[in-house]
Amino acid sequence: MRDCIFCKIIEGFVPCMKIYEDEHTYSFMDIAKDVDGHILVVPKIHKKNILDCDEETLINLMRTVKRISNHLVDNCGYDGVNILNASDESAGQSVPHFHIHIIPRRKNDGIDAWPKFEGAKEEITEIWEKIKL
Ligand code: AMP
Ligand code: ZN
Image (cartoon, rainbow, N blue to C red):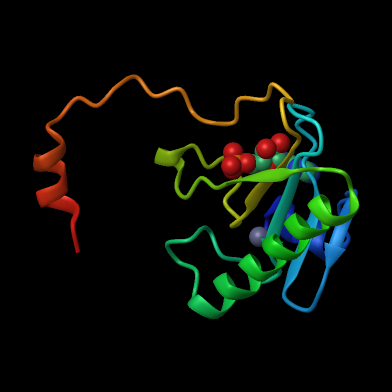
């Protein structure tokens, strides 16, 4: 068994509050208690993040993200969702098994799920020249 907390949850060696499971994906409550209804969705296959994830795994993962999001809005009284991901430690990833955060949202719930950036430091056109595909 890989030394990975999310692999251990998927394999049933670590308990979780399961939200949903299918052949390729697994979803459970995030235990951070930082915001109501914080959910994680993970692929059953161990991938670190979007950078090493094959397209088929990514499609399966996002299908489940959409399914749970629609369930939250259609059946659970929410109006929308934030979908969050950190890919790589540089981006704030703390658990090295690919996961998408879903934050269920209600109108006027007062949650600020958008990062507070400090303002761009470089010229936007210089960055654009460097990063366009
Ligand atoms: P990130 O910082 O984007 O890598 O997010 C990792 C998330 O995993 C955090 O929000 C943690 O609260 C969550 N987490 C860590 N261990 C567990 C666990 N055993 N069960 C549920 N969520 C966990
Ligand atoms: Zn893993």
